Length: 259
Image (cartoon, rainbow, N blue to C red; front, side, top):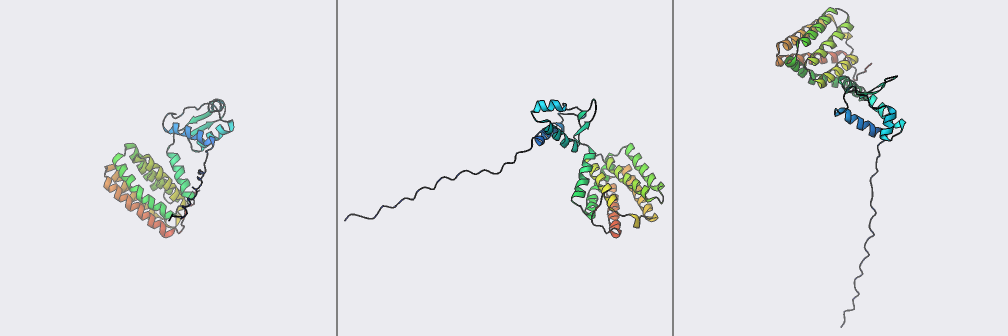
């Protein structure tokens, strides 16, 4: 007897799926030009003070519009990588990023992110003792003279609290500069200015505190002058931690407000 079972029906193959693409983001031409110039400045190909081609020449060389070239130069000017000088003999001149660029950026982050005052103190406690140790290791006679001058200024301030505070910031900046580390100098400058602007020191900036601060600064300077890195670090750590506690006791504001 013949097998009369029907043959199985094969299902049709599914149609091929059409390929899919992710959304593409095309950068603006001005951003591309700014990125190229930025890289050539940072790599050292374009040295400090070098004049970039005139705007008309940039338009001809790049094939971009005058508006695009101007926008790219404005981007670089905001980043402080070029200086635009008006008038005859002016133009766009290369600037290498310096300490002021770091200070400005850190302060913008502090304000933009609304960093808490206690977080600023924590950062200072982590950084400044290291600055003091580096100062003891690397200080020059010029650095020591600046520390002594700032110390003398704070003593001469007497009851003038504003003058005392300016001298206090000057002394702390001098410690960072004596450490000869550009990143730490920039960070400390930004932190000192931010903490100074955000802290109400009047309630506890009395004669006793000023005298105690002067003594502490003198002892830290003594360790720096002697080249004693360990003593400089320990004394600075006690100093900044004590200041943070004293400031927290009288200043209940949670966030800095830079002028």
